[in-house]
Image 1 (cartoon, one colour):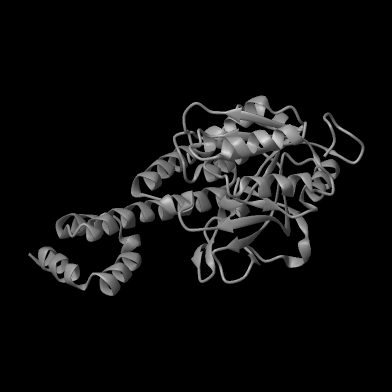
Image 2: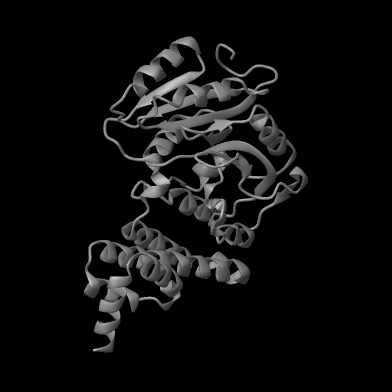
Length: 329
């Protein structure tokens, strides 16, 4: 990369990389940014109080490239804290994000930068190529010729309703945006640091509620690594409850009175999150052998019934009898 500042052929973008115990992946992630056909103004690595050699790797990379800045957080705060710390020091017109175990395709920043220069968008996203603990790398969403189109609030929310498929979980909430920094600052937008999972979804909802103009290309330019033990697998009933409360608060926004499609989609998404919360409570009770608590969870949300039935009859037939007996009594 260049030695600092913005040179001809570069783009006015800050790439923020939150990293926690990412010593095995960080160098590959940074290299994928350095190897872009159009390089960014700066790379900001945020070490989220790692306990492995992540900080060492980051220091070595920064010593080799003047465009790399490192922030060290005193306490582990999760992805939201890392992204917010990066946003607090970013200098570029645009900011984008890269999880420390993911990578960019070579032309990603060039493609998003060209969209930024030729549109009036505040947020730009691309498709994801899923790789890692999957059979074969594949786009998360249909490529559809790689077209670029405006993404409305209701379309975004509909894209969050895919749920789990045979090839894994699909949701627009996994998209990694490039966002105009002026739009972020003008609207006081930050990631919710009380969420370690689902924080992207809430941030994107707030972007739309702030009036974001959103462009989306179906080209899969962000390589999204699936691996066991990732934060996405750390979903819990408490997480679902927090996300549900934030979506419920969003439903009160006046914007939705003029966008009934978005309101219906947000209500449906809120319902699915509520279903996941109840399902998680039920599953925890089943795994703990607490049939009484499982029975109470079963009555809380009928929409969770098909998930509950699958868990019951396939994995816990003895619990089934005990729950049914209690409900009959």
